[in-house]
Image 1 (tube, protein in one colour):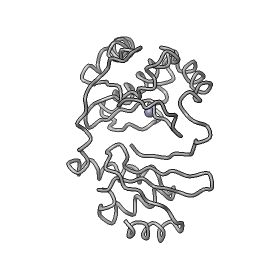
Image 2: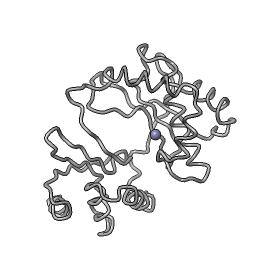
Image 3: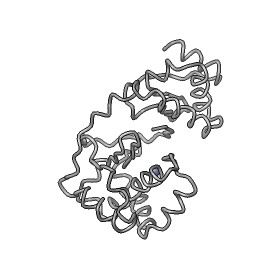
Image 4: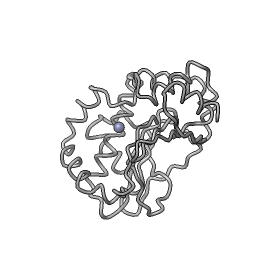
Amino acid sequence: MIDFEKFLKEKTGTKIHIETTSHRKTLVQVITGPGGEKTVKIHHHLVKGPPEILIAIADFIAGKEKKKNRRLIIEYVKKNQHLFLKQYKTRINYTGKFYNLKQIFDKINAQFFDRRLSSVNITFGKRYNGKRHRSIVFGNYCPEINLIRINRVLDSDSVPEFFVEYIVFHEMLHAYLYLSDFKTTCHTKTFKNMEKKYPYLEQAEQWKRQNLCLFIDPKREKHVQKIN
Ligand SMILES: [Zn+2]
């Protein structure tokens, strides 16, 4: 690891602390602390990648050509999936205490996607420990296993149904565009234009702005930039 830290320092000109992980979820995650210090969480197999990938990672971390470098990293991971597959052993559990994700999914699938997403699975993520974190991801779509994961923090009576529905819709839109040959889960222009057609978008965004403190501890909030 020392070597990669050294390499990064040479490439970026700053000292960056490296933590390796074995979660597929975290490929590269750059966390900038309050004093501007950077910590990078990175998948341990990425650090062992070929030189062109190490360069792409360093450039991504330095904020150079982020789009291009993100694509290079993701392409490398896809070509070498066997190295990154471990955490895919996942259980499907869509029944929460307050919300049933499958019901929400089926309703949105019929209403907005002409039932074309029936092959996609949905589940709540792992159990919530009740702590507020410094950042939050409400949902994600993992194309490799065609699965939408919804953060269990949303299974609460303080979260209105329209907000859960919006998050599910957002992830379904990622799935829809990925599966209709766009092969990307980024927030592209097409994605944003289609999302704008969602009738509760504004209401959901407003609710999020006003209630983010339910999920994030403002004292611990940090800027997080990640590929997942
Ligand atoms: Zn998204």
